[in-house]
Length: 344
Ligand code: PMV
Image (cartoon, rainbow, N blue to C red; front, side, top):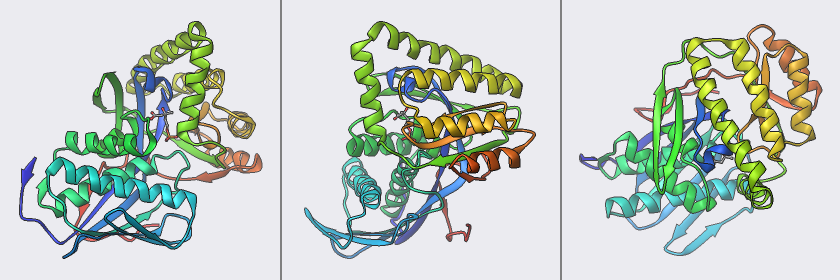
């Protein structure tokens, strides 16, 4: 952590992500492989001359909303659940950075997302990490990546109650990483150099449950069948190690097969549903080498590995009731910009 002169206006951004392998098992200490995507969240912070924190969420792919906090007082004009939860991550990030640096200054925070919020693409972690970066920089501090990722994780835990460091790590580092909880608050992040680019199609169906509820659902299954569920979690861990090696070798056929096995195990954990399964099987029938849920499940996103027939896979997913999204993979991790780029 280094101290520079505080600056009035800082623009920071952080990417969304897809989990290639290992969601849910990562909560129990198994490794996960995660990759950033080309869609980002932009957060601009502007220090104020008073103690107010004003948050303007102008485009979270939801109707715009403006919120003002003064001490414990909250002034808000709309009640859109998803926007409120995104706002909680912004507010949480300001509080946690202030506590960490031992300094608080009022601030205007503007946030804009290129991705739908709450879809399982890691937007909440991107919001948390971009805010940690922008606000700490505005206060004059140059935090290391390790510190930014950790503070972002603190924000996620404070808002959600439970979270692994997976999303906040990938949005900080970008590229492809392997993340593993080591116990307590310790975890390790390994940055990987994949030998091939991954032709992935992302599909989306409406979410029926929150990440927190799905984590609790797996926990509940674990408490009723510890012998079975702990072994499923362990097998996912073994699969992730195999997938890492396969990714390094660039063997897409085998990678697709491993995605299908991972999906079967997620289904066994009870986090899939019919709409997700419809998309997953439609993608496979249209020629995808593999497809699975990405993220917590209960609706949200699926990924399909489709090196040959991307368009056919997209059409099949749409015909099965999903939305699809095209984006590049492996986007740069959290960064500061001199001006906000105009991207779609
Ligand atoms: O749906 P998302 O992007 O919030 O991903 C959740 C992934 C879990 O492994 C289920 C939880 C976690 O914090 O790692």
